[in-house]
Image (tube, rainbow, N blue to C red; front, top):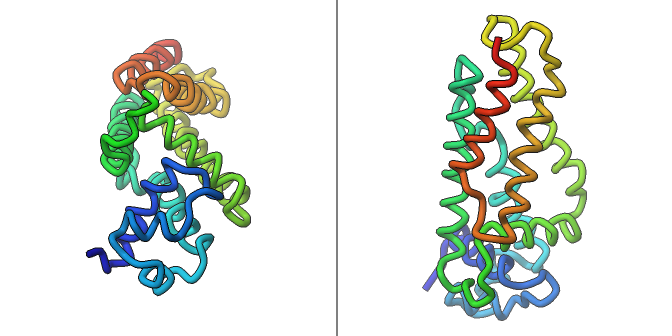
Length: 203
């Protein structure tokens, strides 16, 4: 029997991945956790409280840069590898939480995660500001690394730092979303595309 708060959050994440927020009842979540409804309410008095805790762990904290790597690499070339490795680790973590029981619709774990994100956008109070902060952090991280590469001569001196950051960031997000409808993000393809953008910026 699960009695740990973090385990309840992890199991609830699996339920919210499979079901819309409205349909994911406390009883359904309790069964997934091996608890009674009272056992869930002990930790989370309301379903929204649990949903917020799941979102905090699997969206907000997971996508903060420091959760993917301790510090950015010294060069843009190295950072690309570091970023892709961080994405791959996050994907494997999510896939592990999804498990094999979501294959009935032939959907990738990435698809279920995007489905979860749409629920987060609808039901998490004040989420827009928090999502904006995460997006801004990611852009600022790319800008910092690209600016350093520009100043060191690693890439062309005429590089527009902000636009270059957009190229990398939106390549990742666009490819992630598109491939979520198929087999899930191909990290090797992501890295190849990043390397191609890098080659266009090279000094």
